[in-house]
Image (cartoon, rainbow, N blue to C red):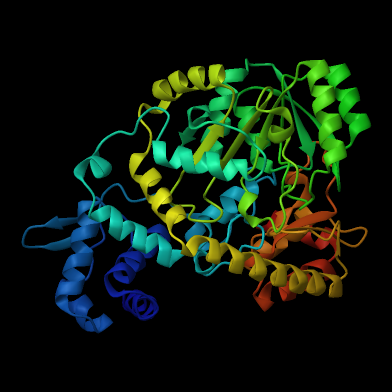
Length: 482
């Protein structure tokens, strides 16, 4: 127990007091240095050893007891609950045994500790987001009427936010009335609702190769048959696209047409017109994911603008530019589809998230948001140049020079497998995004996707250099031992 006190003292010195005491005890339980039935130090003894006030330890113990992590026994003290938390490998070391599949990057990124580095994740660091605007919006909301804080939202979602989204879409040439827009809890929920609405198990869906890896995961959850088409610097390979439509007759095509994930490419007007012509001939519906719209320096072509929302469905969200914690997305589609989607939304989530919609509306109305985005685009551009140069020094070559956004799709030197590189980097608490998690054809083993906003730490490049220098058979041996 003395060694536990020393470790807990170190943990508390590195964090807020009550939270650090809670985290330290949780870590001891997860790591099995405290097991079910073990007695915790008395409040006075722990406060004295950690150099804290007794009230701090009382509050920490009370919170842990309220959650059922520990139990108070009258006249005896505090004990670890009889049903202790399962052994948490994340508290001991990184999970190296999970298959490198579409869930791999998501799980590693979402479960990473605060000190871990995440150049493979798909979001901005908190310090790059408009936290001042979010705080102002939260303060404003705290003073609003009770309905905003307590009531369900309408099925379509907050009318003023839908009106604002319609105006923002018109800047990209997409003509949609507010009644053609339905708010969702996120871009992912928008995709999920559309898959529920448009697909039956076994239907074929076309995706880009490479594409955002969660498209694969979501479509498999809907038991769809997935086919892919190679993506080029100007959009999908048109010859392959036509061939796939003829041979597989997909029901849907899901793509990014602004800033493509993971490549950073931009759809050209010529390719967009050809895609739409082929889609019309084949009766293909297109879902256009426009989640990175605000990162653009100049607006790229939108399929929905050329199509007029006839067979193209346009979706987006605000998680990348405002907050991943405040989940809010939208669907823009033709009126008869919005009608059916509204019923489906009620069936699956009932009312909308009114509080989050109000929060997003307040931030977007704030005059500082445009200034923030101007500064963010410049910051990303500088980071893109810097990270690209540092990767080139290590022997990695960018597939293209992205015009905007946060992603750099980089090719490793010949003979190196990005999955093995990613596993090795994870041993140093660095989460990378190996190419084949984005590739249905598994043809991107030599690529890594880098989020330049999350690639500012020198340790990333040092660990990457060491991982690239190791022989593949050595990496496999390390994996087997782990």
